[in-house]
Every structure is written in C-alpha cells, then in structure tokens.
Image (cartoon, rainbow, N blue to C red):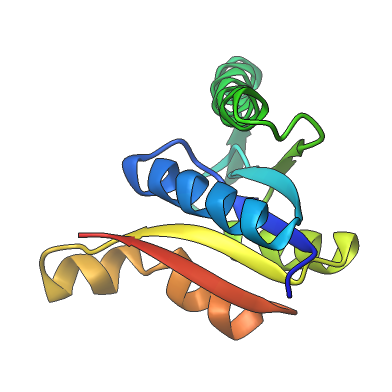
Length: 146
C-alpha cells in the first residue's frame, strides 16, 4: 500500500477535507505524511518594460503560507501524526508538487478539489488537481468538495 503520502495543502475548505481524508488513509495504511504548501512567485510583470519585485508583499505572503502550513501540521500532530513534516515551496504549484513528490519518494499525492460553477471559470482558472495527474510521478487522490 502507500508508505509515503504527500498532501498538497492550501488551507482551503477542500484542503481541510483532503487533510482529514489523508489522515484516515495514512492511519489505515500506516504511512508517513508530508505536507507541502506552494507559494506562487512574487514577480509581477508590468508591460513590456520588465517586472517589479515587492519585498514586503512577498514577506506577507510567505507569512500567510507558513501559517497555513503550521495549522495543517498542528491538526495532524493533534491526531497522532507527530512525525508529519511540512515544507513551504515557491514556484508554480503543479511543477513544484510533482517535483517534491519525486524528491521524497511519495507513493501518493493527495489534493483537495472544489468544483467551479461555469465552463468559463474552469477554463480561466484551470485545475491544479486535473493538471497534477498529468505531471505526477505517482498516484494522485483528488478529494472532492461538492
């Protein structure tokens, strides 16, 4: 069965459900759990002239993502997963989650998914869980929030 599970965690409602399901799966299969939060790069492009880098915005975003990750780890530790590890990574979520799963030798990636209402919204936003399936080095479990 699964021995090393990577939970891509963002603290959202779908992410919370994924955390609960991941915890149950890990208890059943006696697996290790690693959490990863992926913070997008803070380089904002302005026209053709180049980019603007905002150090203060990056610091606020990093603190926000660190708090989400710490909360996820606290929830796991409160239910007996004291050995759970967490890591904050910066970059493009799909690439970074897949890369990290390969680096730690994950057998399974767990990610929350919430259905979006319209076709236009699905096209514009895309889906991390859908794209992750194409790039992952292992199985992917999408925990769906209706």
